[in-house]
Amino acid sequence: MPYEELIAFQVARELLLAVHAAQIADPKLRDQALRAAKSACLNIAEATGRGTTADQKRVYAIARGEASEAAAALDIAADVHECDAEKAAAGKLAARRLYALLGGLLRM
Image (cartoon, rainbow, N blue to C red; front, side, top):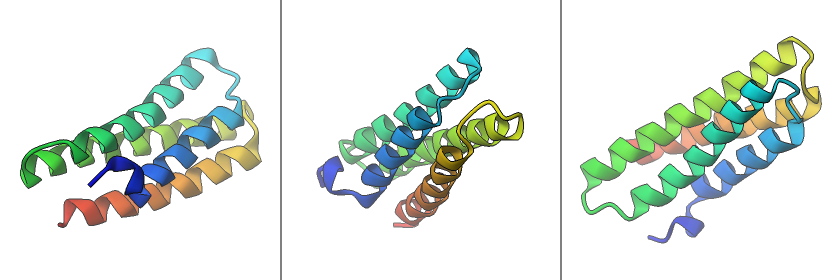
């Protein structure tokens, strides 16, 4: 199954765009959040190319962890007023949805 067709990949891209749009002021936190969101996208794509279900699940689990990290970065930045709160909230919603979708992929 091509990764572009996965709803999880599409939602991961939403998360990435929301992290970028939030414009986190702290450069280190912004870098970490963007790397985590990008990694979630890339890990989902990588998992679709894996040969076994067990290997796919391992990589989907990594993507889920990256989504959680990106969400936490948005939380932290919003808590200290270092980002666009509305964009951070949108990112958090995308992260929650992605977490659930990846949970479904892990149960396959």
